[in-house]
Length: 56
Image (tube, rainbow, N blue to C red; front, side, top):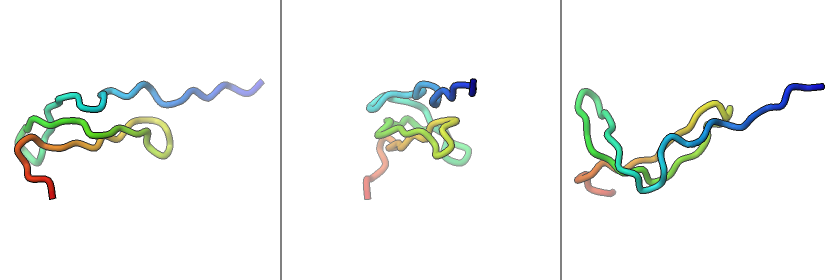
């Protein structure tokens, strides 16, 4: 019997969750806009918006 392939682990962050993210050497407050599994399904990618940064 073939081993069952489990999906990616649960997303580490929820939509609209506030998080801290590094941009270069500085830490900024940010909000999670979206999450999705990577193509190989082994981890997650998060789209974020840094608080106070202009949306362009």
